Image (cartoon, rainbow, N blue to C red; front, side, top):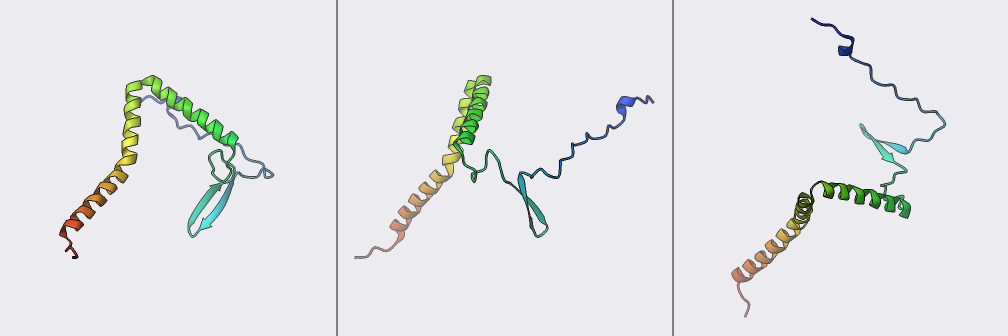
Length: 113
């Protein structure tokens, strides 16, 4: 058996310790046995809605969409179409089911003279 130093497990990297005077950017909430962390200052938080955050988010989203488009324009268009169809499939199904239900109920109900 070969025993090499590269096969030994390396310890995990040490995280730098935070100073005690720094305020955390999250709030801790205990609900029963659950520990919930709520982010205070986030670029994606709706509570801290600012135009600067929104404009930077749109530019990142635009870059991501453009990168996916440059890989394969046809698959990008098909994926957008599939996302659009999955978004409207539920409401369309409910609408047509509702229309069919009212049509059947109008045919089977006794008519008042």
